[in-house]
Image 1 (cartoon, helix red, strand yellow):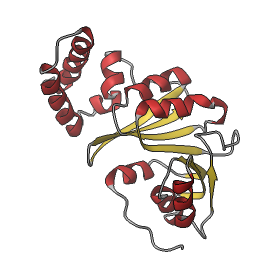
Image 2 (tube, one colour):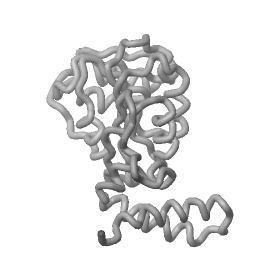
Image 3 (cartoon, rainbow, N blue to C red):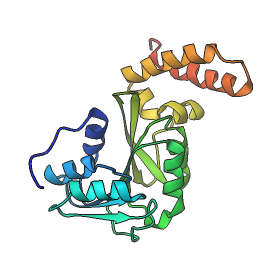
Length: 220
């Protein structure tokens, strides 16, 4: 039932701060904590939640009962109509799965996307460049892991200008420019991990990208 907004965990709070729209779509919401918060806080007027399986679909229907929300059963963006949503969020999935979902129905993508993967955001940054979405904001939030939150808007992207492209795609151009402290901790942990691996070409390439990223913390 409608009521006061519940406090979201930090990663979802960071996502919510990036959303303000008449109609917002959330794909794979499960318990619908994010769309419920968006509605009760007035950040959106209406939400469409898409769930692939009946259990999460029922959970979301219960959580959003009495609110201006519609919960649809289907796969990814399939249940959406082109132009129906003004913004869209994907949270708590692997980045490669997110790319599959976003690529399946490009005509149904809204102009603004907020993405919170549970692993490296590299595939999403690369997809966004190829799909014509600009990276307009990046956040990193401490939780069970260090989570990246990407905000994308349709249009040309300038975030990577003047940066080593592969390092920026892997670790985040705006996080690098901001010398984000959580990214520094992530890079240090990753450096130790890579040093323990067999030095095959893939590992050596990531080490090169990592050292280019760490150079942002060197004194000017």
